[in-house]
Image (cartoon, rainbow, N blue to C red; front, side, top):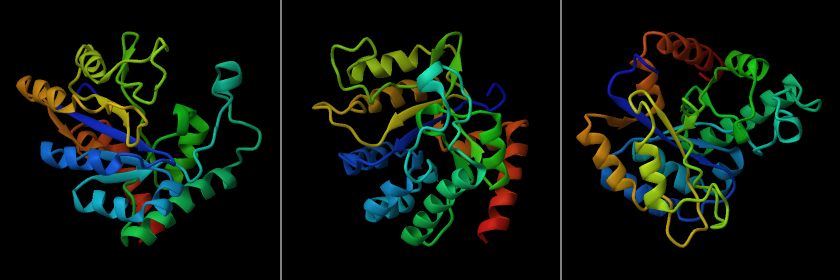
Length: 241
C-alpha cells in the first residue's frame, strides 16, 4: 500500500499445529510488536489458552477458515477457479465456524479480516467473504518478489528453503517495505526457528523509520483501504454484535 505511511504489518498464519507458538509469542512480547494472526477454527479449538494469550498480548486475530481447505484449482492448473464443491454456503460456514470458535475461546469477535488457505482466492470468494464481514488480506508482492517468508519449508534441499538469517535478509531486500504485509507462520518443526532472527529484522526496520503494526492499523493509514476496512467492519458488527 503506497499511501499507508512508514509502517509494515507482520502476520502469522496458524493452521493445525501450535508447535513453538508460545515461544514466538514470548519473542513478539519482548520486541513490543502487535501482529495479526490468521487462525483456523481447528487451531482455536485445540489451543484456546494460546489464543487468549495472543489477544491479551495485543495481537489481532483474523479468520483463516475452519479446516484450511483448498478453495481454487491452483494446485491442479495454476488458475484460481473456484472448486466445484466450494459453494457459497459451504464457504461461509467455514468462516462462521472459525468465528464461533474464536468467540467461544475469547468472548469477543474476530477482526474483520480473512486470509485464504494456500493463498487460493478469487473475486467471487472475496465478495462472498466481504458480504460476511471479512476483508481479504494477502501478503505483499512487487517486481517479481514477495514478502512470503517461505518459513514453512522444512526441507533443506528445497530451492525455497532459507535459514532464519537468510529469510530476514530476503525480506529486507524487498523493493518497498513501507506499507508491506509479511507472511510467516505460528508453528515450526525446524531445529532453529525461522523467526530466530526476527529481532535483527525489526531493528533494521526501525533504523529505516518503519514500525511493525497490525493489519488494521496499516489499512486505516491508507485512504483507499480504510474505506474497504470500514465496509467489512460495519458488516461484521452487524452480523456478530
